[in-house]
Image (tube, helix red, strand yellow):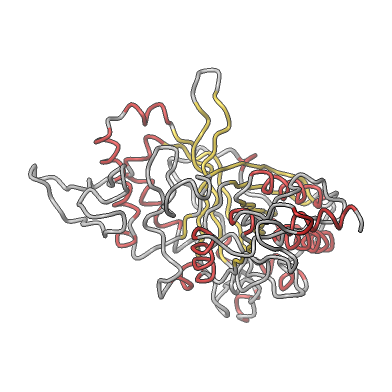
Amino acid sequence: MTENDNLEISRRRLLGTVGAAGAAGLVIGAAGGVGISASGSDDDAGANGPGGSPALTSVGATEVMFHGKHQAGITTPLQSRGHLVAFDLAPGAGRKEATALLRRWSATAKALMAGKAPAGDTGIALDAGPSSLTVTFGFGRTFFDRTGLAARRPAALDPLPAFSADALDPRRSEGDLWVQIGADDALVAFHALRAVQKDAGDAARVRWQMNGFNRSAGATPRPMTARNLMGQVDGTANPKPTDPDFDGRIFVPAGAAGTAGAAEATGAEEWMAGGSYAVVRRIRMLLDDWEKLPLGEQEKVIGRRKSDGAPLTGGSETTALDLNKFGPDGQLVIPDNAHSRISAPEQNGGAAMLRRPFSFHDGIGPDGVPDAGLLFVCWQADPLKGFVPVQRKLDRGDALSTFIRHESSGLFAVPGGPARGEYVGQRLLES
């Protein structure tokens, strides 16, 4: 047996049964069209795997499928560690080089998500299982010009409008290619990031890269909505895979991809079927200012209780907002500029997006101010119907705007998941 074989077996050793946390992830993932499993090798037995080594816990054993109708990392339950990285194709690189790169990336992602160690592996994640690893790929607007595919560029990739509160750094915005990596183990996530970077070779160069985190799996007695660095429950109003209109809001249906140019006239643009559009924003939180606010004022800014995420109008976290309720003082209980009111779907013509962010902390400056906040990632079938109308409203009067700063932005077309034998983007690049 070779050294690489030993590495692969060690990475693939999985627990034969799943605890409650693993089972919950299985149900959620299946509802969203992304398979999640916790399979074990045939010779795993009891507490020990092959050779008497300890079996993996359910956190390490959970595997997300690479192939499927949609790419992994969209409806997959939030992971505890994430990396976002954008690449630009190297000077002189075009469609041929991009095709070879997506083949390499897809092969690597498939292996790593299954807990395998590719040839020449660094051993960074040795002894760990898949740990819910997902690697998701998308194309920026400029990718289509660089590869001679401008006629296949979706109209939904038109540049996002400018917002008055933006303070965007172009060096940390946009990009030809975008990769989102998530995992429930920091070493597994970094391992994937390093493999993706190495695979880029001479074909593409890193434009920007950001690191994020969420609460660790199993840190709470039951699965709970994540909190952000302001301490707020974040993601309560997300559409759910069990909603009857979920797919229509989040994923591009076949025959409705919409492109600029000739392909739009023919209706022949199908490569985005089953895909989604990711809006990516680095949102700095001005935590020193926020933390000076008394609890009651913080809750009025958001429109929800900090303790449990319930609306100020009462109930539990999942209780609908009562936007017409007045208090004894004659004022709206949920203020007219509260973040939850302005962003509510009923206030935006039903506009909805699936928010799937990571928090970030990139150190403390010489002035003692933390460079921290939210790596905002949201998914929708059309950003002009999802992100844009909501952000326009927030830009005009959100009480939270005083305490945040949008510092970078990107919009990426994320194609549907590859079928078995396909690589990501094959239906575009080989059309």
